[in-house]
Length: 172
Image 1 (cartoon, rainbow, N blue to C red):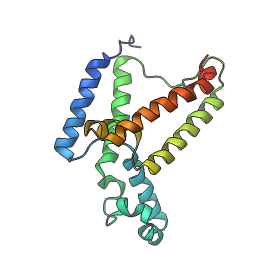
Image 2 (cartoon, rainbow, N blue to C red):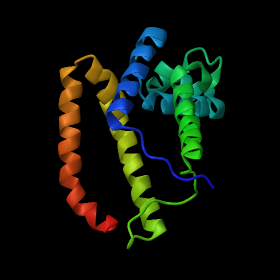
Image 3 (tube, rainbow, N blue to C red):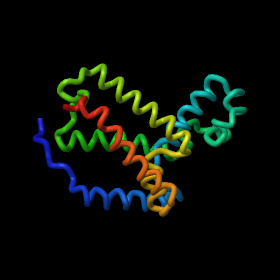
Image 4 (cartoon, rainbow, N blue to C red):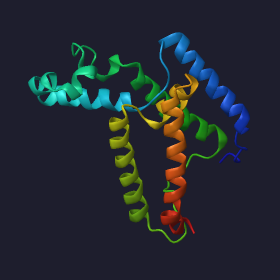
């Protein structure tokens, strides 16, 4: 097994992320985000199960298009696939690739998975209500100097900091 390598310098990682965001604007004409990829995948599943319902439902309208190509017509799906593949390759190259569940010393695996799933579901609903995910709001909206995105991020960090008190014991 390879020896673990050091993490990237956070400033260099931030610069690299900024360059990726700039490239997305130049090449694709839009910023980064994740929720659109999941919406495209859900829409493709809805079309496969009941095309009539999916094409009449306004929630699917933006992602349905003419149905050609399924979820792979949306470039955000490829972005998410790239994130998954890139994370796997990065972990393998740095010697950090292993199967496990990150958790506190006194937290059982089922409880950790339940908390992670619950948080993910809440974030998913929040992303749909906000018409965009956290990464899209922070990266894309922040880069465009959107006041709403900056206000959202301030509220997100404040809310997370306040809520951390309730779950901090899970990690001790």
